[in-house]
Image (tube, rainbow, N blue to C red; front, top):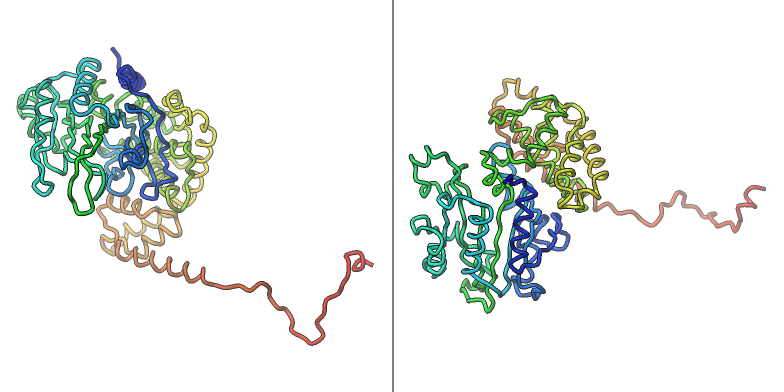
Length: 474
C-alpha cells in the first residue's frame, strides 16, 4: 500500500471517527483572541478553555489535524529548519482528545492499534517512554502507564524519563500530567545490530525519532505548587504528520515525503537548479523554501499579511529568510517563491479549502513582498560583502547591523545567519543599543503636540466676513 500524505491523514481521522470521535476542523494558524500566543503552536490550543475549566466540552471525544507554527519563544525550530531533516516551522499535528471520557488504558490501546495494525509499523522498531517520577513534584514512576504498555510491548522497550521529557505542563499553574511518547527506530538492520536504540531515545538522533505524544492530564497545579487530582481526567495527544509519513514511506528525511518532493520539484523547475539532498547550502535553500512557503501561505490564508509588527512581522521575517536563501544560494534575482505557492495549493488545497479560496491573494502578496525585498536585498548584501572583505576583524558592529535592519529591511536573525555562514559574529549588544535609541526617538516624536489651529496673523483689525462663494466670485 502506498501511504501518501493525504492517505495517512485521512486514515488517522477515519480511524478515530470510527471509534466515536467527532472530527473537527483545524483552528486558524494565526490566533487573534489570546494575548499569550500569536500562533497556534500545538493541537491543544483551541481546547485550552476546556482544559482550564472555563468551558464545557460539547463533544467528549474529538480528533483533528491542526496547523501549527513554531518560530519564536519556547517552541522555536526556525534555525534548525533546512539544516536537519525533521524540523519545520509550519507542520500538521494529528491529535485525539478525551474530555473526561476514556483515559490511559484506551489512549494507549488506540495508539498501538492504529500504528501497528492499521499503518503497519514494525512493532520491533517501536520504543515508548513514560514518566519516571520527580521528587520536587512528589510523584513517583507512572506505574499505571508502564503496566498498560506491557500489554502491548516488551518491558525492555518501555523507558522511564524525568520531568523535562515526560511531564506535560501548560504553565506554572493549571492542568498538567505525565505523558508517554512513542519513538520509532528508522536505522538499517546493520546499524541496529551495533547500537541498542534504547540508548538513542531522546538523544536527538535523526533516525530514532518521536512521532506521537500521549498526555495524561490528571492534575491541577495550584499557586503554591501543590498538585491536586482533577475531577475529570483528560487525554491530549499529538503526532507530527510529516514524521509519521516519513516512517510509512520509508525515507530518510521529512523532505523526501511526497508533499515536499512536489514542492522541491517546483523549486527546481523555477530555479533551474537540481536538488541533491545534501547538507550543502544550495540544498539547505531548497528545504528552507519548501518549508517556509507552507508557513507563509497558511498565515496569509488565515488573514495575516506581512507587516512590520506582531504576527505580521513574523510572517515577513520568514518570507524574507526564504527570499534570501533563493537569492544567495540559488541565484534567483527575481520573484519566484509566489509560484511555489501554486504547487502548495495543488497538494494541500483539498484538505485545507482556505488555501484554494485564497490562492490569488496568497500569490499576489508573496510576489509583492519578493519584489520589494529583492530591490533592497542586493544593496544590503553588497554592504555586508564589503565588510567581510575588509581587514577590520570578525564582528559585524552593532551600528552596521542596525543599519541593515533599519535601512535595508534585514531582520537581525538574517544578519546573524549571513554572518555565521562567513564565520563572523554580530555585536548584538551594540545592535540592541541602536534599536533602543530608535525607540526613544519614536517615543519623543510621538509627544509632539499640535493645537487646534495655527494663527497666521495677530492684529487688531482681524474680523470675519459673512460672504458666500458667489460673493467672492463677483
